[in-house]
Amino acid sequence: MTTAPALPVAVPMLCAAFLAAVRKWLPRFFIDLVAVLAALFNLVLCLWLLHVSWSKSIVYWFGNWFPRGHMVVGIGFVIDPMGATLAVVAAFLTLLGLIYSSNSMESGKNHYQPLMLIFLAAMTGFCFTADLFNLFVFFELMSTAAFALCGLKTEEPSPLQGAFNFAVTNTVGAFFTLTGIGILYGATGALNMAQMGMLLGQRHDSLVLVACLLIITGFLIKAAVFPFHFWLPDAHSVAPTPVCVLFSGLMVELGLFAILRVTSVIFGSSFAGAHDPLRSSFLVLGGTTAVWGGMMSFAEHHLKRVLAFSTISHSGLMLFAMGVGTPKAIAGWLIYACGHAAVKSGLFFTAGILLHRLRTMSEPALFARGKGLKFTAVLWFLGGCGLAALPPFATSIGEDMVSQAKHGSLELACTAFFLVSGILTGGAVFRVFMRVFCGWGDRGPSDRAAQVDELPEMSEEHRTIPFRIFAPAAACVLAGIGLAFLPRLDSMLLHAAKRVLDQAGYIATVYAAPQNAGMAVGHHGLKIGTMIAHGFIAVVCAWLLASWAVFHRSIPRRLRWPSHLEGSLRWARQLQSGQPADYVAWAMAGVAALGGALFLMK
Image: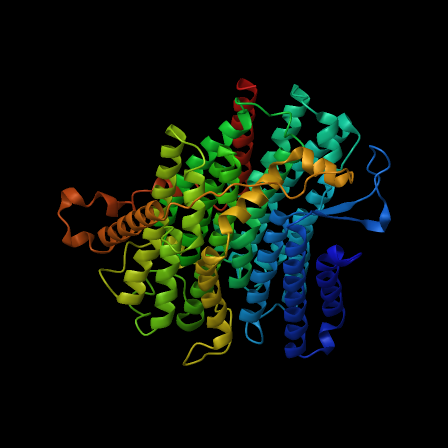
């Protein structure tokens, strides 16, 4: 196992370099085969690393540059259950994306496969690294591949504009993060996260607060949290379907994971105590993002934009769980992130099927044209149930664990935010189901945003849906359900959560100090009745909301208001101006507001 932790990063990078160098002389089938095998290798190896790391975190030092005393002189990986789990999700989604696009999707003169493998390598390294600067480097490598993948269809203007907005906004976030890293380096003389946390201790002065603010803000932009989220719908609506899967399925979650890792390992002692300004800020930002993203999702009529805003809403829910901050809440965050990745990826793959067969993503233009796609309709409907957290989807377990993490007003607020988000995002998906697959009601209001010119991703046409296109969507939906049936799931999640929150244990792991890696965890005891009740209420209310929108002309005027949510948010949708300068201005306003709140609560 001496070099095994480095292989999930090295193998995709080497395969990407090989394909980029000789792609002109290789047939498309061989290029797809190499890419799929590389992703499959990563999946198997990451599953093995997850199994091994469960009893004790895996520490790997490149070049055998071990710590000397308290000085960390080398670059290392620390693989714990949470990081390994997210790496498994990255490999799984990349593998399905490559299968979906194999021998069919136009790939930009075969640059597509190398970029996907670079994206995979960057995500894996991001999950494993123990060095703060390399955390930044891996995320920027991920972003660079994402910029290129977003604008892969260079023959269309919309993808280029979306990629440009993506690049500008995320580059601003990168500057924030890098500046914060520089401040911490000047204060501690270290870049290893464990060494930084040990040297900072309980230090809580203004310098530490500014560094924390800048680092977290950079990752909040990556995580598309309000008001840093404006780039995400523009990128999702124009990127190829497999790229949207990685954006929504994991890249947003990795931004939140970075915040969790940094706040627990580096600032765990600095912000310890009952009055934690970071957690309070996460609760406010998370709740606002959940409601805002849900409303905007229901107001959209471009299928990818509907799903993009639902990702923003669920990102808010996950940030809210991090604000709760207990091991149960973080355990719920992990299973919710995995369940959301599976469900949302299944919906994006299903949207890709519609684009392939019906050549548009506009809900009004698709009206009643999906009646013959019965199996596709089932997947889309199940995806809506998953967003509403209906058991047995894994999202329902995450919701239950986060809601039960703390009692009192915080529990009520958590339940309310999960319910509102599930109703709005699930209602948007059900509304599309009613109009596109059932042909009920009318076409819906006219929507300029839904009229984006988008060429089909696949040149060939089929009378039936090819298995390689349908299988990834079905696999994601089934995975979202299957996760809930893993044995001892609640105990495993609590174990992973306690490990990621244990600053002293992480430091001891890096310095190879004696520790009790197998921490005792309790049994959460999932409340099945409560889960079923919450999920059933969310699905029923989401269905009623969708019905109000679809059949609004048959409803008395006094009862039509919920249906007006489709057209009453024009003022809010105008904020999505498509101008990167506006998005940067919103990001700066968000930094000022968050910084002011942190200093006032200091």
